[in-house]
Length: 398
Ligand SMILES: [Cu+2]
Image 1 (cartoon, rainbow, N blue to C red):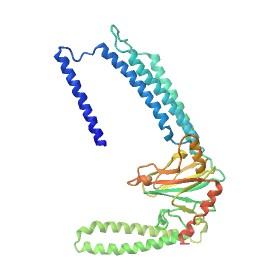
Image 2: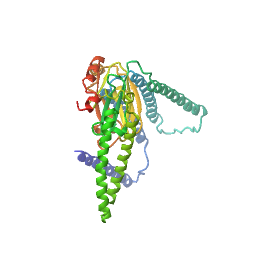
Image 3: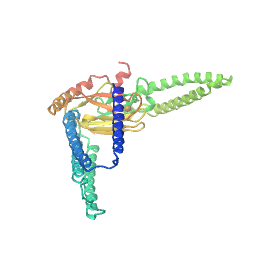
Image 4: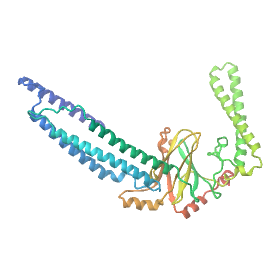
């Protein structure tokens, strides 16, 4: 179908070109100058510009009315209203400027089209005009920027409240994992050294550190055999195995370094219960991000591999997830998921589900990094989180 349309367009363009060419040839045959534009042609062009301008404005209006329902419903977070305000003001200014300049452009094309005896006015320079079009936009832009900066600092530097929830969102190719603090309301420590298949976030409990060391030792033993075998192959002239040997040796030294780190760690924090505080009762949730209405959520973001970005469109929030460092963002949901359906409906929009999406092209399956968000009342939220196993229990296989 698309090919057919393309073919038709090409044919139409060719036909128009041919018609113009034959018109030109016919004029030449009549002995007229084909390049001479007649006054009536100029007027037709001027009128056509006005018609184009009107159609152009009408189409813009139609788009705004017909497609307006597809833009996001009003903000579901407290700070989001401020961002929407900023956006509306900026958009309003742009729209007004756009409409005025374009209306003037089309009107002037019509007003000043070439007429008999009319002479162009020579207008090389005007200081007042230069000042006006420099100072007015400067003032407008400066006000917008300072308003933007104030909004930014209001949004970014929010005082934490007494009942705020500190939670962690971990991004990796290609999924999200959430960690809640559990009963003690504090998140336990994490460390990349203890990341294993059953502890994807690297949560540090006495048990997970010990088992990580056991795991690492097993890996070392296995790799030592691989290296030994490859080494003897290379020594017997198998040149093709050299790269494989180098890789295996590199892996082995990385696992050995991890083993030393873990041993040092266990030695330092033996009998140090306070060090592991907060980790055992953490709750790891892999399918949904639960939030409580009117309760501040203080996010810490991490990435396990590449740059990701946690984008919460309904809450007007976004923060990069950077490998090797932590980033933060805080927002307070102001509607539960059920309430949001009504809020959107009252604005003529459809709302199904709050969503967290990755907003950085992070790899081939980037599009899969969508994560549902459910905002519950405080009571429902507490019950929901309590229904999950704690990390300690999960790790112990309980
Ligand atoms: Cu991503």
